[in-house]
Image 1: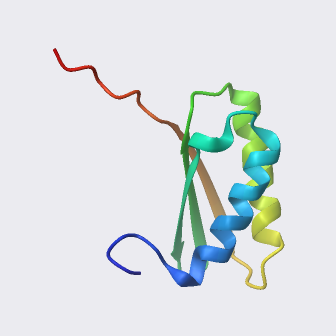
Image 2 (image 1 turned 135 degrees about the vertical axis):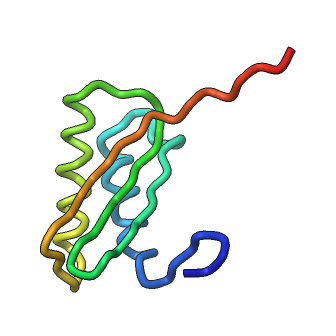
Image 3 (image 1 turned 120 degrees about the horizontal axis):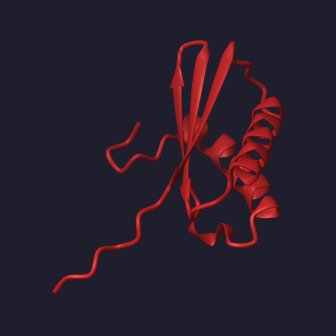
Length: 91
């Protein structure tokens, strides 16, 4: 992985995840995706606007769909969605 977080080995998957997320969320512009391979495991971390639990589950399904579309298989895929914090106002 390069220092800025760009990893060419996971970039195609990251782009596939984001494409599917955009089809699910109306406000997908603020969603970011980080892919962390760990041997047979894969962690997919999404960060974006606050969403309800049903939408979060729908996104997890989209992530798994993107993972299945890739050439590599993983024994376990963990999907995490974290609402992004709004920037704090300085006084």
